[in-house]
Length: 382
Image (cartoon, rainbow, N blue to C red):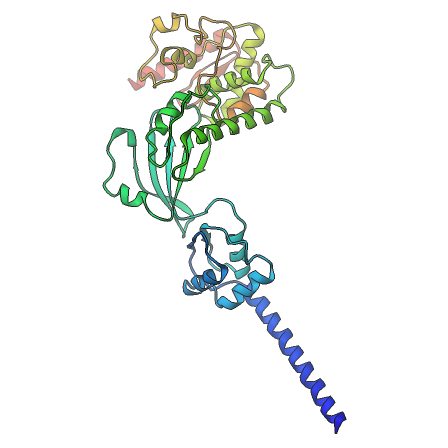
């Protein structure tokens, strides 16, 4: 009898063991397999949210098939307490494992609504945009220049949305004065910038900020990033450059930045100035003349006058030898890299070619031919 009872107990134990193993295998497949989500969604995770609450939210949105398995999987992988606040793009068919990874890995939000204050060379613009979950691309909701005073009626309501993220973006080639002046119109920032940052010391980049952040703290972060970029690229500069300090590299980079907006031209433009410096030739670049006139406080808005080409300012490279005393704008990383690792050419001249780029020349005679062609293009346009 006891032998029979023991045999039955063993059989039951084995059956339960196999059942538990089968359930674990089934749960693992459910956790790691493709999920039921047919279309991408933007998942908002509030600050203080829990994995339990999120699992129910996901089940309600049709992103997971079983909230309990989602919670158990997050706990088993030791990620249940790593939930991050933000807005996250969940692709169609995402597994529970993939969703847990998305909401716990950290980093910037990947979808939702964003207010981006873009500071450009000519003007600034507040752009309210949101990610289309289907394409993963931003769709502009509204855009306006806050300094112009024409603020859309629905801006105040959109501005106070609970899931709104804030960003400040600097274009390459903006001046420090422009940045400080335009930041005054960013109504989600606070405080003043007491001292004008040195020209060239701000990194053109995109900065995610929090409402109420001090403008001075944001400017300090811009300076920190630019200093880090310059330190990194200076350590990897080419040999035998005619510039001896990181500050001179920043000056040359700012001239390259203002001379071309064509990315693959930067190295050639830099080579022209490097070749001229090596030969003791004046740089003769128009953007330095403009900076001497405007001090970087506004776009010139017209052509350069002959009297301005002859005017003696510290930045007029038609008059002075070598580099001007300061940068003429805030150059981006690519222009700094071009200045420190220019193309290997023997070009000494360049002029616009009518396509948005430039025609480069080795001799004055060749350059004069390029200039004549450019004047013909200008005359045809007029």
